[in-house]
Image (tube, rainbow, N blue to C red):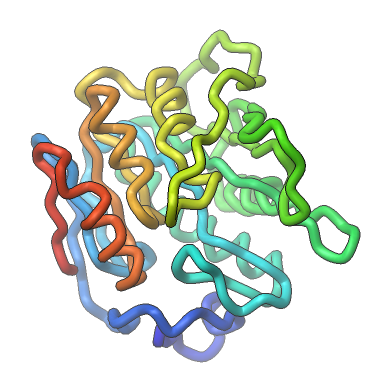
Length: 255
């Protein structure tokens, strides 16, 4: 079980017991790798990040107001604002290690009892409140059909200091998610690859603090970038290890 001290943001959530790594004072140092793709089994909120990354690119963990479980690893439930602040804490911590504090967050909203919960906007607002500067808001049409669980569109938020927005319309319609067993449609590599091509130089290093089953790492391998992912869920680490084993230079490191 993940444990958190009294009063912490994470203590207000209930998560799946699929994580063998306990939240302790373990100090894990995460470095930009010289080559290849590294998946670190650790808690991204407790890691220390060295300078040299080119972008934080991530799709934050599953959230639902009442559902305690997720088929895609650790899920959070409880207060939405507290969830957004927790994600922002992790993202801001990582952004300090990135040139220009460049961050790109991809998040799909959730339908719940006839209401649309704006997860992405809540996270973006929480990041802005912690000092990250919003540079662009884009929209990705991730599927053409209807879903009763979430909208067919996902929000993309680009943040950072001292760089201009890429000259794109901000609406991505030609990159549909390809359904893959064991992978949620918000984490597919195709859209991550498009975003890397816009925001990361060839050979650059991408950091994903919520790596899940490794969609960002897979995209980096196919788009000429290097990558480091952090994942706390033991189940997701095993899934990612199986999925990415054939990628040259891929390794799993326990924190």
